Amino acid sequence: MSQEVLRHLVMLGPPGSGKGTQATILSEKLGINAISTGSLLRHEAESGSKEGEKIKKLIDKGNLVPDTIMINIMKQTLLKPENLKGYILDGSPRSVPQAKALDKMLASRQMKKLGQALDAVLYLQVPDDYVIERIIGRFQCANCKTLYHERFKPTKVFGICDVCEHKEFIRREDDTYETVVSRLRNFREITAPLVPYYEKRGLLRCVDGTGPIDVVSEKIRKIVGY
Image: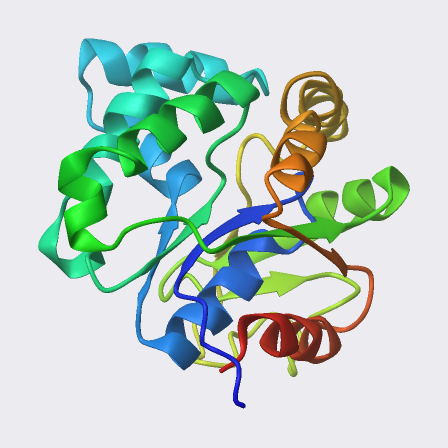
């Protein structure tokens, strides 16, 4: 009997573990949206709103956004029509209270009717030193936003984007050693407790995230069943 494809997923792991990359691959394979809460928050931070200004200050310091803001953003996002056939949450929930709030939301009559129950939580396991190297070395094309890394994924021709041949690149302001250490500390203290939480619920699936992208992707493919 063939395995049922899992279409309601959470990507869990420390910053720089490859959650975004693997979520994008899954999105393309399954035909569902990868919802990056980090991108949603950065978009709000750049909006110029009062709430956006608060979010920007928190992100720049490597701190987590309050649960009330995250929960509100996730509720609005999961109710959008384009996410009703499945979703991949990248970066949320970030704490046990957020996970409980998400569980409550998905257990509501409305969500049950829509078949939005969570299928699995994919936990990418990556050591701290590996995370630091990954984050500090990453950059992206200023034009097409293609992601690169000084060691793991450099451009084929130095200084020229592989995709659009643009010659200008940018780095995220929060990709510094100090900020990464702060983010890792926050992950261990606030987000890591999600591992036993989801393990107890029978939803946790552990994946070694230290290998090449295609190797990690294959491990995830076997779990998800596409």
